[in-house]
Image (cartoon, rainbow, N blue to C red; front, side, top):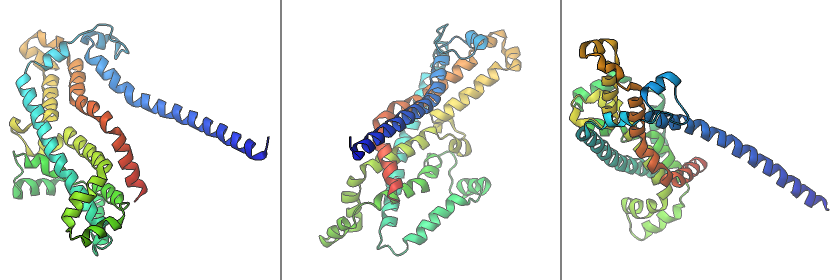
Length: 303
């Protein structure tokens, strides 16, 4: 056997060992991420007394759907909250992706003389902030965000992190495409819409997932700017419901309304609320995973 063949066999064996170790580590990390969510699902279908007595089981020993039945007692409010969240997520994600990609495209253009200055300006805002109180006063007193969908949509509509990913991704698009389109008489907006965006599908999928997650999980902006339940999304509805459950499960509440509140499955309902809040994202994520991975890797490498 020649030295080259021995070296090749050794490299193949070393590579196999590295792959095996890598798969084991990734598998352990995946289990660490999945097991807590699995326990939450199991706990939501487990009887409350069993949870108190034995903790979170691997398999539900005493099966119960009481938590979901209590949660679904007010289907109209749940449907309205879901509708608000879905609408805000759809509209906000569309605008957020468009703004991030358009800004990233402009800053990736080497013929834009101020691109470095604007890039520094955007990056600077990630390091320093004016603080919560000035931001709240600006949004409520001067921009009139109180009790409106604008207060839920606008704060998350632009993300510097998404813009950086878009800029890094579009740096890899050949400039010859833009130059040839300009020779044919296309303006910058037409180039962006008809040439750049079709070439940026992995980027769009990645930014859409990031933005949709941000809007879906957002409850803090509604807490700041909304006190009318009409504008509550599903996250704020769940937070309000958890607060009510915590109050009803307290000793004072049980004494006022009777001992029947002592049997309220507070832990099971909390688990059911967590499942209901995160389930749509868990269902959608596998369909966008390949685009997410590709977009993040290309955006990072090409930066």
